[in-house]
Length: 305
Length: 243
Image (cartoon, rainbow over all chains, first blue to last red; front, top):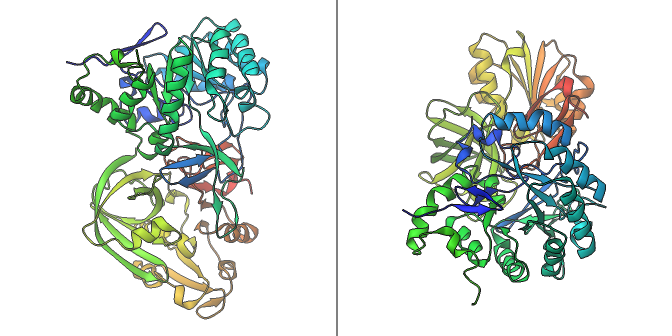
């Protein structure tokens, strides 16, 4: 019998599979499809201080082996998340959830995390400093080591829960930013967010997305994600949640070998709402196939020494 | 409640230029209302293709779709026996209970198909629907006879006047009706909104990511908050729409 358990900053997960923020809502709608308590945890929809509608539509464009989105952090705002979304989640999910938070200033991030900190069901914070779809916010913090550190410090001040910083791949040196977050007190790192991309409609001869550019995700980005997780693993000691193009148990193993302690599944949920369930179900036999008894033993296994 | 399952193509043939009719066999238990849609996985395509359900019974689903890109082109070439991975039971669908005795069903082009099952339901419950089918020209007409066979009064409009009433669907709307249901392109919706005399339901289209409410790709603003076309729609009530 193989062991799929992992430890994420002191909280044990039955398996490392986590639906990524923005692909799983606040969970309860997926609970109508299958028992979501089989998940390790999930990262809820990116939450900001105030309600946001997001960007104009079209917000979705298909690509070869992936997709672009320019949703732009649509969410009901932190107060409604507390009063409406989390109570609904509590009825169908008895594990800790990961709170994904975004903002437009250091104060925004700190405010939203402080408001959410009192919620018992929240096990970790995942601070998104890498949304490519919102001007003047998000990504502006994720592309500068100094700003990334500043957000990290501000959030750490308002919570004792573990704080993961979600990093952008749209940078020259992701390891430098990862290190700055670690030095500023981050308990872990999530990577990668989407890659900034574009598609153009040949009939209209204009960008497909109303926002022109959007975040590229899906299986096509897996090699980039693996490379970045591998590089960050060499640069820091804190745990990494790896993501980018994950859609099978094999992908999970590959990401963990690169250095991830847990793995998020994003775009695959949008193609198959049962993707995480299917990955979790096939994880034991895939581990057996590759001679893995204890999943946590393979974390970072692809590195030398 | 959405379901994922595998469906066998029974028939797939052309009805009009670029318009095809595909009948699939499989579990239809997730379909609960006219105007819902399915999301189809295609080889080599990352995202599924959302297609409205034209009709369904205990074991078959009928889709009428237009070839508008690579995905629907691929579908148009599928032969009987092909097996497809579908998500079914998506979207809210029309609410026929609001129809009154004499509802108007207004379809434009490839917006016509989801009105077929609605028309069938309305007639089954003793209603007297009038169906207005809008096309550009005579050669594009499909399903006029199918609606007539259900027992509905059918009016066809063509933009160039080559068949039926010349002009747009709104040229055929000067009549008595209790309620309306419509599906078609946005310019048609705007024209209907100008002249409609009663309450009604509009079925919208938008580029979707997932089709089941997870990605927020197809959101719109309504008078009662943000809605997702795929999950809270595609059918919105006239009273809630922000134009």
